[in-house]
Length: 350
Image (tube, rainbow, N blue to C red; front, top):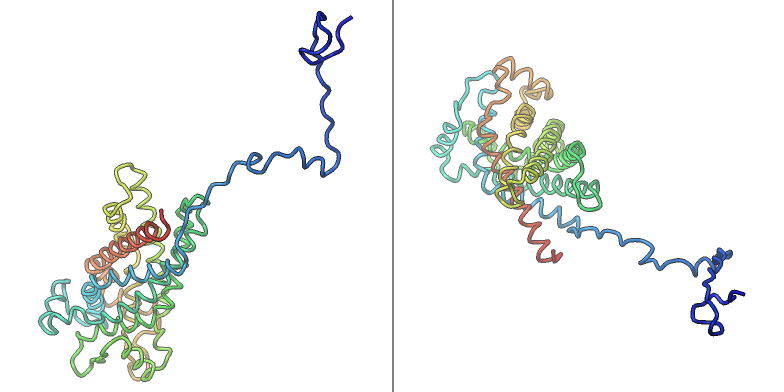
């Protein structure tokens, strides 16, 4: 007879050894018994991908404002030229300045070198309010709607984020925007008609006292409309351009790539936003005539500009607008990228 022992090397010597398979273990019936058969958590599931470290929301807001303010210091003279070009020929009058160089020459001749920086305090306050809000909200929403591995959202989502961030920032920054338009336009008026604001805070205080608090938000709707167009074009096209350049394999994530993406973004933004920008500029600079505002609304501005100055006057000052917006976009994003880079390196340890 064959050996009944199933373990190799067991049983009496001289007998043939046969391995008998053991029956399968019964499935555990109780919860406690089943728990004994479970694999450890580390073996049961692969570790989840660690989410990349990001800077706090307050830092995003701060860096957005500082980047915009740093860029404004360099481009404020171009902002002044752009505003005066857009106001040239208003009301059917002859154009005061045929080109941007005529504006710059007139300012230097009549107001001196300091004249090209008229309204700098208002420009800085606008960046501290408008740009801080829009870039801060944009960065937060971009991170929130992006992938878990830090991948950015698709193009349409970027555009929607840009519109939302721009509208919120424009509402917050409208008082500084009104002060900026008036301060940069003041020098083109005869001395008896000038408002003579000393700085942005003097402008805000006098506007509220002399014309009412509502004047601080004059032109708020076209300002927000312009911001929606600008941010949808600028922020989304910058992210898309940068992503396209990096995917091409000819660029690295450095300052040169940021510069090229910013110049593309600035060109798209200029073409899209100029008609809305000229509406905003003229409404915020308008005066009361016989107790009535010079323009009824933004549509009235558009109709009168086209009728009295021609259709292409909606793009009046394209060159100084792009000359201002292009470098401002470049410098803003370069400053922002560099601050984020050093924050990640010094604080987050990336």
